[in-house]
Image 1 (spheres, rainbow, N blue to C red):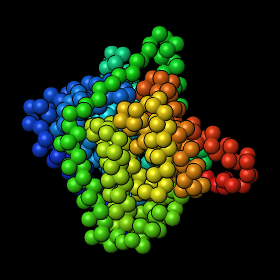
Image 2: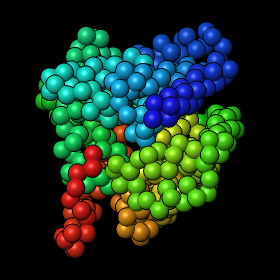
Image 3: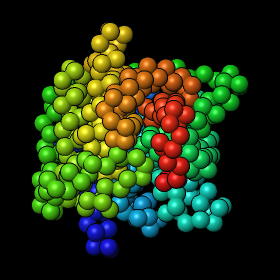
Image 4: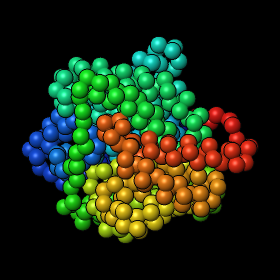
Length: 414
């Protein structure tokens, strides 16, 4: 078992180091230095594309560093290195292209560590809030730089956010019963809402921003293609095959469905690579941009290719988002719908468990919801789609349970 753990850690580290190397190749050192300063000082609320404010090099380096930070936390906590950690690391590095940076993630992580200490439970029990709880990293940056309260207050708020996410995550699961893969995103939405409501009570308000780069799509496309194809090649080298992939596709994907334990790291890597290519294909099909937020969406799909997502259960969700845009309420290529099609795959377990029609419905419900919930938490919960997905999941689960009692089993899997 330790050999498998070490192998996964090496693979994760290599892919995060690759991001850092790409960053140094794409930009000169001085541009990286200045861009990195801009990233660290940014309030980082939605939507802040770090490529737009810090450049390509600094953004990719930040992504790699944040991903490595996640690996270090998982290793030091002695957490089980499996699908959950893989999903967490790639989600962290993806969102390090819009909202998370090597400065604002640590107060959240410290808060989770403190909660672990107070409850006298091992930190490995809280590895999900530790990694995914960094969804609230903008609370640190917005407090410190947006409101100009200073670094100390930013750190204090971040620690409090980490404590609250740790306390609530397991309970939030019981509302959607594992059908929203971004459970901590829902939790972060609730915690972020509490913080923002308190801020508004003192007269502080936050308006959304739109830092969205468009000019690097053609440059980034081949880089990402090579990146994701390498997953498939490595997976085949490590023993992945069609039989193992079929085993993954048969699963609903409901939390927690660890594909690493079920099918092995080789098959998981192939699944991750396929999902990465699918995400890229969708963005190109609708004529969307490839930038920091979009890469985050694709990286999150890729990461959860180890924990619940596969091509069969994500496609109906993406199709649902695509179809709801046809009446021209929103254009498919606009930032909101593009990100909703990628991140909305948090609801993939619905199509995996109940079939493509329910998945299609979930996707169609998700887009209108996600386009309007950001204001509730002051755009400080990066997993806005996770928050929206949680609300959609709660509604669908409640209806299905009432229509047919016993249809959704009651066990807690989180």
